[in-house]
Image (cartoon, rainbow, N blue to C red):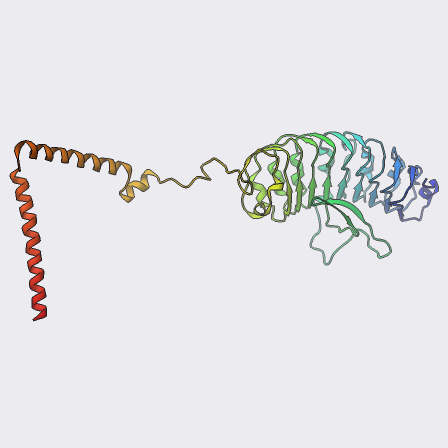
Length: 370
């Protein structure tokens, strides 16, 4: 078990006991004078509930309690910590709804929010997300790479799911931002307010019961590099506006009820079948199912084009009809009245004219030879 006295040390900056065989509960008596900046207890067998004395850690920047068996509701009271930037509660037994409505400005500096693989339910936590100022305002013009830890004594690290793979960030960039709410029981629609997190790099909402359509506001996430909305109940079309996400290199919309044509252009031309499988009503590349609409058909010539070219169906029909009538009349006259004089004169004139032209051409050739 973790010695309770560790929480009472007022000069300790880092408590890193990750990836051990620790069991029991966390220390429950964090003092008001503590100086903790990092607490990492992930990868153990710790049980809950969480100690509310963690709210005394006013300098805390990184809290990683992932991969334990903590059983509790969401600790919204952690939102009062003014410096908290990384909160990982992934792979525990947390349950209930997530709400931050009891705190005026919760989680203002949060950059990494990971509550995946728990038993949370209800709507997505809009009341928390709308206050994530750390994902709305990022100073990405600073010189060189900036990390959360400002000294070389200790490097903060965290495990995240990035582009479908579990990766450990051995150092955490201040510009790295991600939200992972996957593998829970969230319901309802994706809130429009997510579009305000313009510096968000990763969003994972997979394996939930999310309904509704994909909001257009996701196209405002111009720094987004991976988006996973797979295995939900999403319907409707994929917004064409998502093609504006120029940094998007991973997309998973599989196992939903999406329909219509897959957008074309930009990054969408790089995604394969696996990004869309399980959506039986989707069509267009890269799927083998083509869309039965006007966009996939060869352009048909219009009546204006036919009239300009002179070969429209009307002209052809009129010409055919006139020719047929003239032929019938001519055949009728020949059959009943014999050879008409006007026809004989016409043929004779044409023959004499052609003969005259032939004689003139022969005379000219003889003069050139002489």
